[in-house]
Image 1 (cartoon, one colour):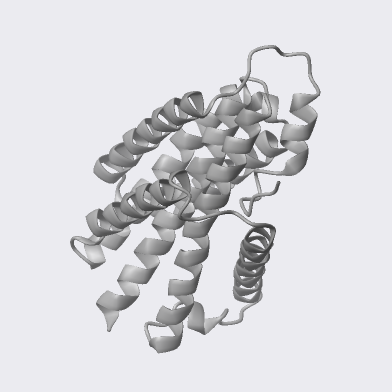
Image 2 (tube, rainbow, N blue to C red):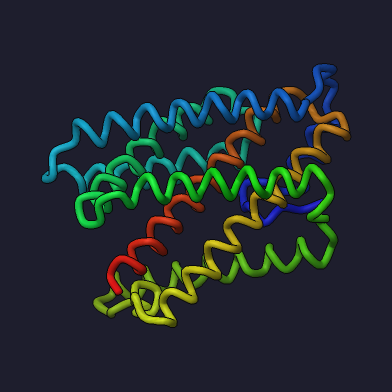
Amino acid sequence: MRSGNPVLQDRIFDNAIATSDTRTMTVGGTVQKTAFLLALTLGTAIWSWTRVSPQNIGPLVIGGAIAGLVVAIIISLNPKSAPLLSPVYALVEGVVIGTLSMVFEAQYPGIVIQAAGLTFATAFALLGAYSTGMIKVTHKFRMGIVAATGGIALMYLVSMATRLFGGGGLAFLHSSGPLGIGVSLVIVTVAALNLVLDFDFIDRGASQGAPRYLEWYGAFALIVTLIWLYLEMLRLLSKFQRR
């Protein structure tokens, strides 16, 4: 059992199931906590959209992204901290995506509602397909998405590293040409399929009797994937707008 989402790892459930906690994780409980974290994310996203001034955009995005990464690493290393820190992650990331959304919306009016709609439509469609058995998570399917996710992460790291050292990064990642759009379509697809792996991982964890605090951890993991998918939708739609 493995997920392409880097915050969902086999050892998390394996170690947790070995504990003596008698309160077990449920899919329903995870869904409720995911909804709560989404509400927090939306709340700070709206706040940042309406209150942040243009001169503060850069510091907020960079600072929020760093803070979110630190919190995510802490939760990943210590899943028992998820009930306390996953709301913090949602609040921080809400500021980041709200600020970025404001920037995209200023350049491409209407793009935010389109990206949000596509993100949730994709999530619900994949959840339905997984729940009805239309999509089955096989070993090959899982390993393929894991490998693709790792490749995308490496590609982004290389692009950021080259920019830090004065290079132009990987130009095709930002291009609105056929190659750039094709790459974005692939990344969006991989991000979406990570949701399927996450659903499967949480479902299996609940069926194995994982402790209740992992409901928060599973909700946190879903938020990570949904935010990634939303941001990639924004990038893809912006490329279509620039053509």
